[in-house]
Image 1 (cartoon, helix red, strand yellow):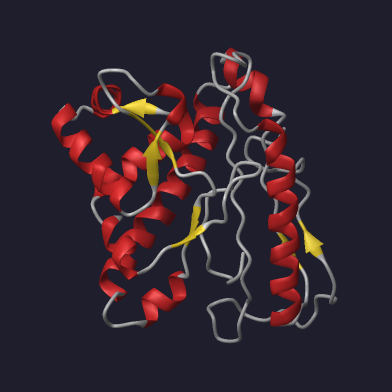
Image 2 (cartoon, rainbow, N blue to C red):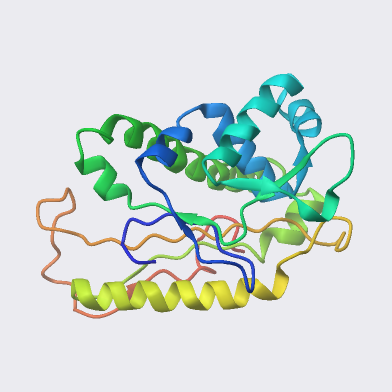
Length: 236
């Protein structure tokens, strides 16, 4: 990541560099159905307008139109491995994309649409995590939950850094995640039926004075964290 507020989908191995979202592409994300379409293609892989319409309860004409718009702005492309059929198959753009959200929020010309897009992004990200933790509490005896319960975790660690050190840390972490995730790129439910989509959420941000969290002068400096196996929802 080049900025602390970048949001990106990890690129496939050997894929082109991430697309930097500009103001026009940002506006292309504002429609809520397009966000849902991107989620479907991200989590479940290539699909047609008809397949996506059936999953989302939308007409194929509506999904087809919004898929073409997402393609126009560079977020998706035709899947070259499924050409020649009656319907076009779509996939997420190789290389993914990134967004400098703070810049868009600071610009009066893009602030409103950025608030819409980023607000939805954070709400949906939190909702997916909440749904997992709720499923642990509601259906603890479910075979799927029991299988995954000890594999899932959440963790919070704090450490004192300068902004420059934080940027270096963020880049190193992103490089590691990309390299590790590359081992599993290209898998599908058909090729690996014993797998599920796994989502890793990361945030890196400072606790600024007056930011709503009181300072704790009694606490010693240095790394502090919560062991993911000690009280983390879904961790054990």
